[in-house]
Length: 94
Image 1 (spheres, rainbow, N blue to C red):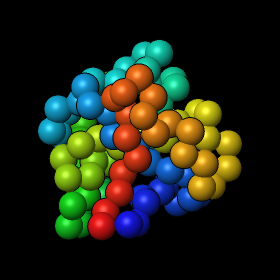
Image 2 (image 1 turned 45 degrees about the vertical axis):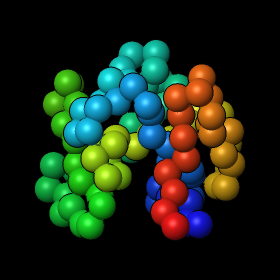
Image 3 (image 1 turned 180 degrees about the vertical axis):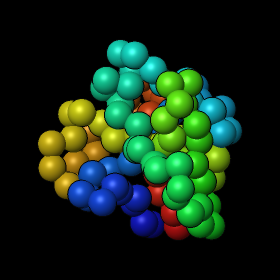
Image 4 (image 1 turned 90 degrees about the horizontal axis):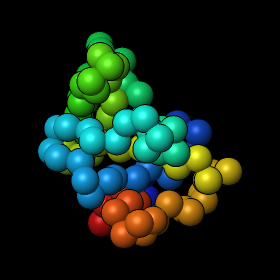
């Protein structure tokens, strides 16, 4: 199984309350779970796409689900967000 990370090696997560192509994580949620930002000019590839947030910024999505990092992950390889509130899950591929 492959665990997906950002460019710094920080684990990426999806949120069960998000919809395909739409983030529902804002304010306090986004402070704890920073969205993985994407440039508007980003070229999407395979399972990876870009989702527009309500503030006009863009973020990455995997298989349509927006992806985030977690503030309690302090170093590359940490996976402290797995299972938080029963709604956060590490982004994996087999």
